[in-house]
Image (tube, rainbow, N blue to C red; front, side):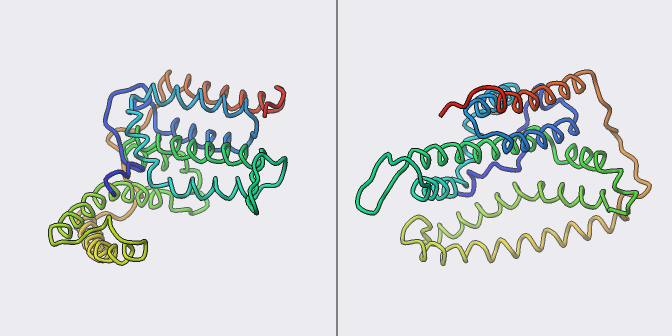
Length: 270
């Protein structure tokens, strides 16, 4: 159930992607997400597929681990595909009574599902290959110019880091609650949707209490250590660009330019 959720978790392994500067990976994800919405042709999907495959291979994150992260959005994928297939007008591919399927609907459903899958995998690669501390430092450094207009950049970065740290902790806590409830005779796999939703209440209430207690303990610990935000704080390991990071920036720019080029130059296929 909840143990299949891998989004937001760090996968510890030594790889080229893991060693990149977190600022490079944040910028890469930003341009990657934009690239998913600047094309609607077969060639654009081909370029994105090759680029994403290269990143996954270089990250050394197991593909089975990445697929586990897609299970929570399976219902959303089916829901999106269903409406695109049956609600899009065009050339009829199949018709039975009031049910009509068009070739345009099939194409739109396929490409929309691929775009959603690529969006989840691409954004998840950032957290798979970057520790919460690195992600916090990268975000704080990138958005540091916003401090001139009194934006609390450090506080926002710290909140995101704490949220990412809490994801695996809360998942473990939820699994312990599920196991405890199952040992008392609770069954979360049988019954209709309404019955399952009612059974989830016995999980959500203890989980909410546990999360509130952990948040309070964390706040007390930070206050006991005299934490008062990012003003005047120094870093033990300040971020510094390496030659590989500059080459990575060049690859990102080339990828983005290639996506735009193939979308507007090559002929449309299907």
